[in-house]
Image (cartoon, rainbow, N blue to C red):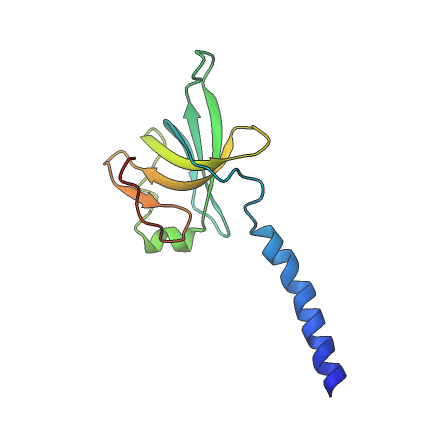
Length: 132
């Protein structure tokens, strides 16, 4: 009986480790960066939602498309995010953790919608920033 229990624990751990690694934030820097731009696409999906944002190049170059990863649709719906809350054409501001490799993407923390409301798109119920 003991060996079966030990086997079950080992098998459970083997299945849990990939799921834990998948939800690691290791691809992103720890600090926040603020970006602003025009929403091009919104995909409220499971397990992760995405916003594609056109951001002006700070050096005066061509606008760049950024991919902002957020928590899943169910978590966003619980805080009042719907298809109508953020839509293509809206100008928004995002506070996010940029990708470590320097590409145009980030893990979305907070988003300020065109109506001025701020919501936590990471799904961890963090306190809303006062300086955003």
